[in-house]
Length: 168
Image 1 (cartoon, one colour):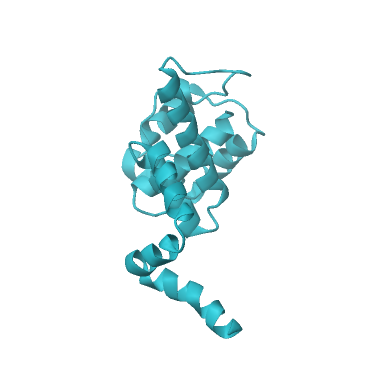
Image 2 (cartoon, rainbow, N blue to C red; image 1 turned 45 degrees about the horizontal axis):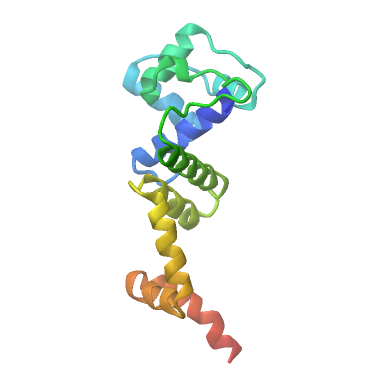
């Protein structure tokens, strides 16, 4: 993962931790750093880091961002090609990879808040693999997904029903 990808991921996580339901914008990060840490970083500098035109951070900036995002300063570097962090059991390793994949999916679908939120909620669950197998079981049971949506999210069920009514 590149430094830019890590910063985008941290903005996504931080935004969700702060209850925004989305990633923090670069400008929101700049303002929060100024307000909370009483230090300054420019939005254009963050942008250059994220888009790769500035591949390295100064030590001062690395410490500032690591303090703001509450990560180890060593995290804020590009990972070497083929870098693996797995010292876990095979099952835990697969679970971590699944969670990372779900979080990356949430970032890709950030323009669809419902899908992004669903992917993040699965990734945050203690057993995301079990969540996905539950979804599989629900989808294999005829009409169960529609019935559950009607009960748990009535508005979503109504939105789906509207096109069917117009076709009849």
